[in-house]
Amino acid sequence: MLGLGTLARVASEVRRDIAAARERDPAARDVSPVEILATWPGIHALLFHRLASALHESGVPLLPRTLALVSRAATGIEIHPAAKIGRGLFIDHGSGVVIGETATIGNDVTLYQGVTLGGTGFQTGKRHPTIEDNVTIGSGAKLLGPITVGHGAKIGANTVVITDVPANSTVVGNPGHPVKVEGRRPEGPDADWIHLPDPIAEAIASLAGRIAELERRVSEITGEVPERIAQVTPLRPTRGHSPAGG
Ligand SMILES: CC(C)(COP(=O)(O)OP(=O)(O)OC[C@H]1O[C@@H](n2cnc3c(N)ncnc32)[C@H](O)[C@@H]1OP(=O)(O)O)[C@@H](O)C(=O)NCCC(=O)NCCS
Image 1 (cartoon, rainbow, N blue to C red):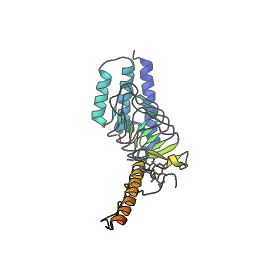
Image 2: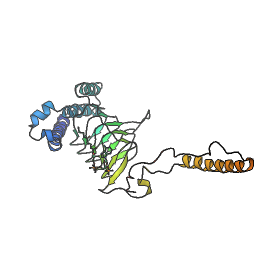
Image 3: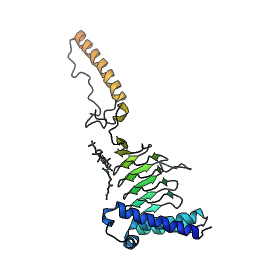
Image 4: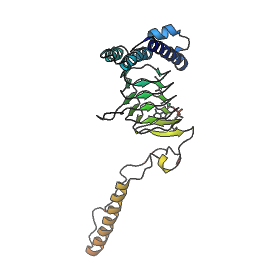
C-alpha cells in the first residue's frame, strides 16, 4: 500500500527533478527551487507522474489515470502511469511530449518539447523505447518501438528512430542514423546512408542497355534510324556528403 516510505521517495525524486532543471535549463539558473516547482510545466508533469506511478504500483484504481489526464490538460505532457522514469529527468518546455506505457527512462535524461516515446502499432507487451542514462532527445524526435537508446546518446531534433541507438552516439535524420559514435564519424560501408546502391535502378539500367543494343542492330539491318535509343536516367541522383566522410 501507499505509505510514508513511498511519499518520502516521491519527495526525494521531485527534489532531484528540480535540481535537474536548475542544472540543465539555462533559464532556470537564477530561479529559486520554489519558483521552479510553481512554474515549470516539466516539473509539474513529473510531480503528477511520480504520484500517479506510486499509486499505480500500489494497485489504486482510477486515480493514477485521472492524475495523468489532469497533468496532460495542465502541461501538454502525457505520461502513462506505468512508465518507468528514473531520477533527474528534465522535460524542457514540454508541450506535446508523449511517454508510453512500457517506456523506461534511466537517470539524468533530458527531453525537449514534442518528443514521442511510442509504439509502432497495436502490439502488446513491451512496445515502447528504453532510454538509458544521460540521454538527450531533441524537440520533435519520435522514438518508436521496443528499441534501446544507449547511455549518453544524443538524438537530434525531429529525428525518427526505429532501431537501437549505440551508446555515446549522435543520431539524426529520418530514418535516424548515427553521425557520431564516441565523438567520431562512423566508418565503413554500413555507415554511408546517402550513397546506397540501388539494385532496382541497376537492373533497369542493365535491361535498357540490352534494348539499346538490340535497337542498334535492328537499325543496322533495316537502315531505319530509331527515334530514340533506350536509356535510363538515374532514378535518384545522389547528393550530399556521406556521413562516413566518403
Ligand atoms: C543533435 C544535436 C544534439 C547535436 O549533437 P552533436 O553531437 O553536438 O552533433 P553536431 O552538432 O556536431 O552535428 C553532427 C552532424 O549532425 C547534423 N545535425 C545536427 N542536428 C541535426 C538535426 N536535428 N537534424 C539533422 N541533422 C542534424 C549536423 O549538421 C552535423 O552534420 P555534418 O557532420 O554533416 O556537419 C543538436 O543538433 C540537436 O538537434 N539538439 C536538440 C536541441 C533541441 O531540440 N532544442 C530545442 C530547444 S527549445
